[in-house]
Each structure stands twice: as structure tokens, then as C-alpha cells.
Figure (spheres, rainbow, N blue to C red):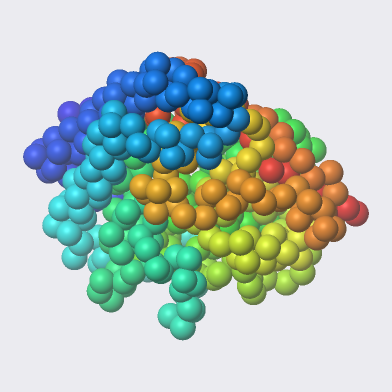
Length: 384
């Protein structure tokens, strides 16, 4: 059998039948997203857009305007039900592997790890935006402990990411982190960071590329979820990387002022709230040193797109427990960061690096555009 995507010594290894189920879910999601999903575009052009234009005297101008009409269409309902079921099947297909190997994986993660450090806070309150529902439908979310020294949430996430992304995150499932590193190296080649902070690090998929790119820097990863951080620490050691992990709420970091040269996040803010977003941006401005740079890849509303593409991008709001995404798109994140004292706040475009061929989104279904082509990165600098 070929080497499995994301393989490392800390990662549970599926048995033959478990791997077959996981590969089936990948195929189902590819079919649902790319083949059936393309039908939404055709339905929009053939039925929904003409009916909307007759009723309003103009064409739709945003994805939100399409919400009522598209969700009433029987084809969209059919596709959405299948796609929602395929999302639930991601976790169903990997949980068997994690539960079967849990005693060994917990013991491995609980053993002394020579590289980096792990700092947990059992008294840390989990905010409501992370506890009231399971984000991405992952059972128990990212923070729930099922046993002492639990790592299950991290292992489930690590096995689920390649399936969720249709195996488009490259062999180390770290395309998001590699993309952000590429941004810093190409836009800020003069930056020689001593300390780098990754907020919402989960299992470290976004963190470790910074350890590779900046071997002389101290790398820090922060997350709410203890089981994810335990797994991240073991995963980093299995891959020979030194990172300092800590369980904190990014709204109230315990790092000193002016401490980090780079503060980065990847797909963090859309899983929080309006108040949390304001607090996190304020904390970033506080811990970023003068001359430092902060950059974030998330569901900010940086560019307009064709209404049907925008609408399909909002599928996650209604069907994948990413409830804050729509509100985040309406927030003036550039203005918020400027008010916090950051300079040259802007959106930059950078290529998303998967190591796979680039695919156009238009007319190719729901999933085809997610994660391919150029992405928008929110950037700010702290003046000297």
C-alpha cells in the first residue's frame, strides 16, 4: 500500500477495512462536491436566476440574495442533504481507527517528549462559541476530553483533514501552513523572526511549516483544545520539530507585550464570535513587537464573486456549524486592526500551495474552488 497522506509515528494507522471506508468517503465527497455540486451552477443559470430577475426586475447581486430561492430548489436540497451526510461520514469513518488505537496513542502522547514543551490549563473556561455546537460537525468538537491524557479529538482531526479537503492538503496535510510561510518569505524576505505565534493551531498542521522555514526562531502554538494540543506535541516530536504549545484563549493571552515577530492564524476567526474577534485582534496588536507582522487566512469578505459561488460558499454556515462565518464577512477587519494601531493593514493575494494542479472554481461544483488559486490574506504591521 502507498504511504498514507499525513503519516507519522504518532498518527493512528487504519486497518484495511477502515482505510477502505475512509477512501470511500473521499470519493463520495469528490462526487458530491465536483459532479453533483456543479449541478447547482446549472440550476442557478437555468431556473433560479431567471425567476429572480423576473420577480425583482434585476439579477441577484450577492449570495445572500440567493439564499431563499436556492434553498427552495429541489436539486439544491437533494445535493445539500448528500453533502451534509458526507461531512458526518468523515468523522464516522475515522473514529473507529482512533478508538481502536486510543490506549496506545494516549500512552505514547503521555510519555516524556524531548522536543518543545506542552502547557495545559485544566481550569480554562471553554467559550460558548466553541462549546455550544460541534464545529465542522466533529463529535465533541476540538476540546472535549474523553479520558485522562486524551488525544482523541486531535487524532480524529488529523485523520479527518485529508478527507475533508479531498486529499488536497499535500502529503503532510499542511498546505495552509506552507501557504502562509510562502507569503512571509516572499513578501517579507528581510524578516528574521526570533519568536513566532500560531493562534488556533489545533494539531500543528499550520505551525510546523514555520519551524521548518525559520529554524532559529522559537515557535509557539496556542489553542483552546487540550486533546488537540497533546496530540500536536506528540506529532511534532514524531516529526522531529520543537514547538512550545499552550492551552489559552486567544482573547486573553498570557504572553508579554511586544513579544512576537510574527503572529499568524489560519481559519481561526470564523470559529469564534464578534466580541472574540475584537478581543483577539487587540491581543495580537499587544503581543506583536514593533516591526513585527501579523497575517491571517480566513473567511473574510475581501473580494466579491459571482452570486452563486458566494452563496455556495455559505453552505458551511447552515450545514457545517460555522455559524459566525456570515457575520465575520460583514466585519471591517481592516479598520479594526488599524484602530488597534497597526500600520499598512490590507488584504494581499497569495497562491494557495497544495503541490497539486490548480482548478478553476466557476462551474466546477461546490468544492472545486475551495483552497485552489489565489487566496486573500489579511496583513498588518506594527510600526517601529
